[in-house]
Length: 318
Image (cartoon, rainbow, N blue to C red; front, side, top):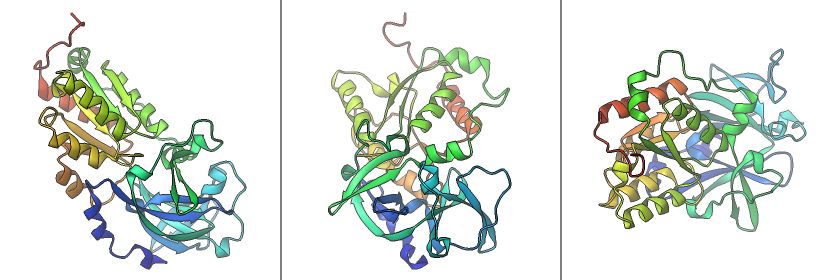
């Protein structure tokens, strides 16, 4: 099963082309699920699991894999369904999210498919699984549900969202009050986390849930004669998003003379070794793994400080 990930470095060629590869799997039923291959280290048959006292019910235990102790979460139970049975026939998808490694227990792994982000759509409003989905797509006649893993991990092991005392400086807050930040993320929990950090600076925040909406917004401003690099201190964008990913969004912004100077930070749970060349390839200014409140605050603060008082007060703010 580990051979399914052979040649992962060739996938860097997908960057800026609005394409991704999904690893498809099932969770004790017929529904097909997908996860971005860039987040997957390997897939292994479920090893023996050692229970953790007082752990979240979704945590089935820890396993020693290649000398590393890894927490294994039952994805089916995490999305409020029955726990997986027959662990001797199950698999563990070992992933990297938010600078941490964890295993996701699944019933079976199918295959990898290469797709265009335009084929990945937001989940339909009112769907029963909406709370745990970040997107849906189709492979052949089958619907594929893309889980909001950030939401799941936050419920199983909530991350520290509060900024440590003393990180935010008052002189920066004083400068930031007349400024505005643009954010873009398809994950509800990620939007909430970023907004919480930005709220400490008093900046105004404009938010969209995918790259396509964000690019349309920026183009409308540019068409109206607005200098978007002056209007927004920075764009903080996720990478994985339905319809248009953060890499493609960044590349499109850089190709447009009217907005090419916009400062762009890619903020993603994609924390693998390929991020640096990817970020450089599309022309982003910075990359920050999710979710570290202090590090995000420091990066925002550094950006505001670098501007000094250069930004004019937007019209209407007198």
